[in-house]
Length: 169
Image (tube, rainbow, N blue to C red):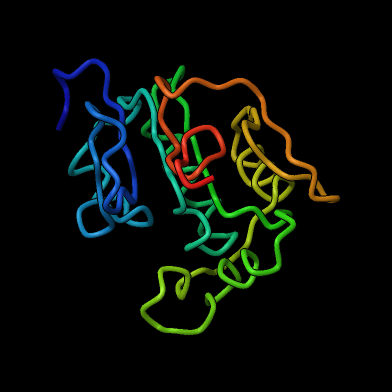
């Protein structure tokens, strides 16, 4: 348990990226998002300041996504937040959409092979608002493929695969 730590910030599904120093980086083996026992083993309820999930929610069905969003809410402080990034279903590039599609582009070892959904800003907002979050979109494409970006600060959690921080864009 983390009873003595005041400012707990957690990266779920951290992968190989450690772009948020000082945050607790977790993988599915140690924090199974759908299994509350693994949450209880690591954290007290209402103890987490921030959760960062970069390319995690697309590996969950919509219903699983709702369940995990609700679970996160249980472990977040009342003033806590989630910063969530997923592949954008409205991003206007056919090769990108082929890579991020449900089941991925083909090879079983491809990271997208376990994709269960391709979110767009509407499905993501609906999912989080349904369980009680107030949503502020940071970067997204609309139905016409137009890119929108609102101000955001990496101090609150760096999303590596974003227009703001991805060195390959």
